[in-house]
Amino acid sequence: MMPVSFDLPKLSRIDLYLIFAPLFPGIILLGTITETNRSLSAEFIQTASIGYYSKVVCLFAVAYFLGLMTISLAGLFSETISHALGLHVPVPSYVNQPWNQAEWRKLAREFIGHDFVPSELAPLSPLEYATTVATAPLLDPDPEKRQEKLASLNVRRATDEEWSRWYFVLRNYVVSESKLERSEFEWRLFYLLHPCGIAGTVALILVPAARNWFLWVLFLFFLVTGFVFPFLVRYSAAVSLPVRDDIMCAQMLKILRQERRAKQEDVAAERGG
Image (cartoon, rainbow, N blue to C red):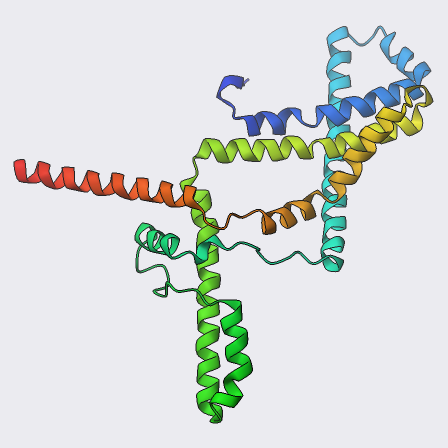
């Protein structure tokens, strides 16, 4: 038999979440099933042919399976409802666009490399685009020249979109992995409340003795919030960006200075050698 190694200290918080998360809604549902089928539960516990540890393992396996099913259904329902909600409640465009700041574009161009990013540093404002499109027929009656001017505007709009994509790439790159892992863990931990809300609501419906107004409010809040959670994430991302991302600029500048200092030390070492 091959030895199985399971070293918990070496697992990340995300790994631990993926392992143990199904137990939380699963235990709630298992408790509900046990309470609504007391005779069957008592018969299982009193069965002499199954050992104590085997019973515990069996109960944990059932709870784990119920939890996995609940989490899968919660994800399916929330994505479906959030998609339908997004069709009727449009997510606003980014209120703040830090990638349009001149200092950010200059640092990003030096950080990424001139060969990979657009050469245009000046952003195209929506007012300039709308004004040019509206006045182009009046200022330039030549259809070909007017079309060239509009094509140039579309190129600048595409350039701004490329800069925005680079912004989100860099935001994940310059941030430390521990911070990204912590952020993902916090979001996953919050979303775990959704399947727990589903399991708790089912428990309150099937077990009259457990009904309490506070538990009703708590589990229904988890339930409703979880249904629209993906939509809320997309909506908050559109309105929560800063006007100027000074933190990212400082991180890029710090990395550039470290690389420049390392190159200078290498050159000095080669000359000294």
